[in-house]
Image (cartoon, rainbow, N blue to C red; front, top):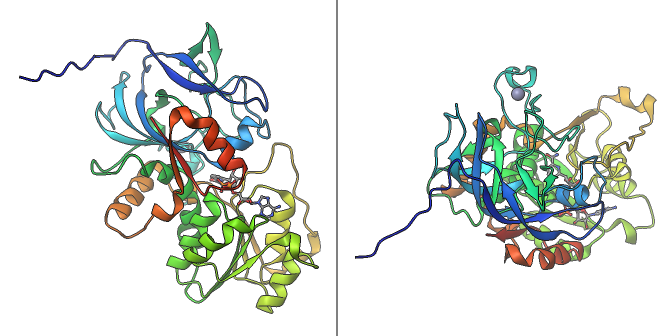
Amino acid sequence: MERKFIMDTSGKTITCRAAIAWKTGSTLAIEEVQVDPPKAREVRIKMISTGICGTDDHAVKGLLSVNFPFIPGHEGAGIVESIGEGVSSVKPGDKVLTLTIPQCRECSSCLHPKGNFCEKQDVLPSSGLMLDKTSRFTCKGKKIYHSFRASTFTEYTVVPEIAVAKIDAAAPMDKVSIISCEVSTGYGAAVNSAKVTRGSTCVVFGLGGVGSAIVMGCKASGASRIIGVDINEEKFPRARALGVTDCLNPRNLKKPVQQVVMEMTRVGVDFAFEAIGLSDTMIAAWDSCHWSYGVCLIVGVASSNSQLSLNAPDIISGRTLKGVCLGDYKTRDCIPQLVTDYLQNKINIDPLITHQLPFDQLHKAFELYHAGKTIRCILLF
Ligand code: PAD
Ligand code: ZN
């Protein structure tokens, strides 16, 4: 008779592999780390997969204000290994996604019908610590910081219960990690935040992971024209397959890209999305909108302390400028539904996944990302 030995790790420190960013801009190092058990209202997760998001790259490069050394990654799918005292929404064995923006259901954002930027988030600013201001990670006796209270580039992580979304037990865990950020951010920005209308015109700046998910959302909403802007033309064929009707490389244009968009649409677009994280492209997106009813959504995360400078008098013409995080979804309430929608073939996330590699090939995954070859590369544990 076959006997299974399952080691009970609950309540114990787990030693496992994790990627650490030791200092600004340094290559990630795969190290042996100690992961403490979850404290009250915390959850320890055995990671199954994690995507590499543009925000992780910004953080590792030191473009965002984060504390080093830290374990990057936030776009994760895993299985609950153990829970701390008072946790009631998940139990060991549950399939979950990590959430960069938690939903505490008590703060001003959570209680407002439209708010999703929970006050208990750790992005702006980022302390790299859990809610009790301590860390659950150590390496070689040193304290290691968390990344947005998610840290998914590790075999085990600890997160607050309010930053965990329980998902459908049938979810394919090698794929759904991207729903925790890329899909909810991009698809959500179009369908939930902008509420792109049938027959409308859209422009999407940046055709990487998030931009591609925005294109999917614009297409699903019935946009009649979707202009895609990227400096990497290798992104164009896939973008066209997802619904982009016109591709522009600003480096090959003789005029500013916003002027070209204006001429192509005669009056400016209904909806403009910025999914790069640069002030210049945010301004270009704003300038591409119809001056009266155009809506400009800023999805890209700009580097810390950067400023956005707009021509002040132009603002009264009526355009809307809106920032959006995770598609404006109330994360724990809404993100599991996207997983169910995927399982029911209402959305298809497969074209957004171009690469899947084992976790120990993390460096190859980052090389492919930096070479502009990936839409999303998922690391598998
Ligand atoms: P990505 O690296 O996959 O995509 C960025 C794309 O922009 C690439 O295709 C680049 O070639 C392109 N690009 C770079 N510079 C320019 C330029 N000057 N002009 C035109 N195109 C350019 O990253 P991503 O899609 O994972 O993330 C994109 C941004 O979205 C990034 O700033 C990230 O931090 C942000 C993000 N925001 C949220 C949110 O909730 N607001 C969530 C996740 C990611
Ligand atoms: Zn909250």
